[in-house]
Length: 167
Image (cartoon, rainbow, N blue to C red):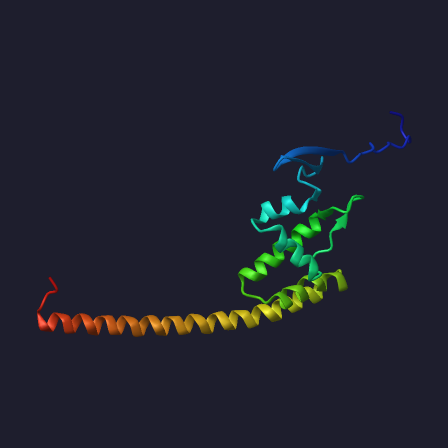
């Protein structure tokens, strides 16, 4: 190549691969990108299987406006990676004991502030409150365990003092 001749960057193309999968006797299509080889779009059936929930659960989250899937020309729901991320956050929030209203607020805050700052601040606020609740619950459980151990030990002593066996 001659000096001074600009080098051309090779053009890159995003290749889409379609994978046809038989799901309960129906042919489902999953699209994959050559970059990540993970599905780019999902059907409601695929999501339900992935998260081990019913399709009704996913539709319920849609009714709550937690998910807003695109629609195909035939009206079928098409879920994106963004919807997958939201579902992961929803299920994590439920596992940690947050209410659906709290989860909804935390998830949807990202749409209002794309920097994620407001979402993080609210998550920290709710998380701190939940940690306090969990700490209190643990303290109550520890007190209950101590009381049960004391009663068990007292009952064991009484049994030993009488010297009788239960045959």
